[in-house]
Length: 78
Image (cartoon, rainbow, N blue to C red; front, top):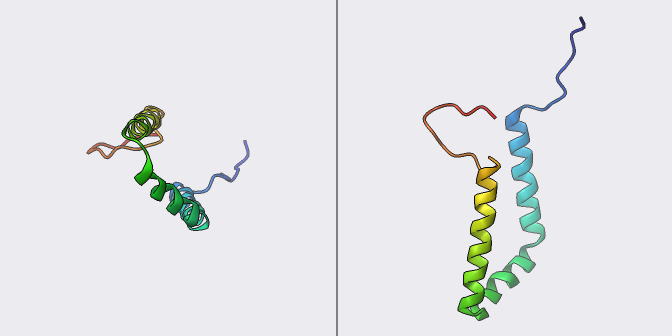
């Protein structure tokens, strides 16, 4: 039996790396995001409702796949 090193980074390091990546992407695409949010002013009510339905469906899928971690009083093993 050999002792090996675990090559997986700690969970906190993965989370921090993800946050840095998301912030860098947001800063890199700030002009496109400003245009997108500005265009919502000119969207019809039907289009805004459809966007809301799609976003809700995506959030439900993320929650079902446990990518969105809910806060609870008990520890969650992932």
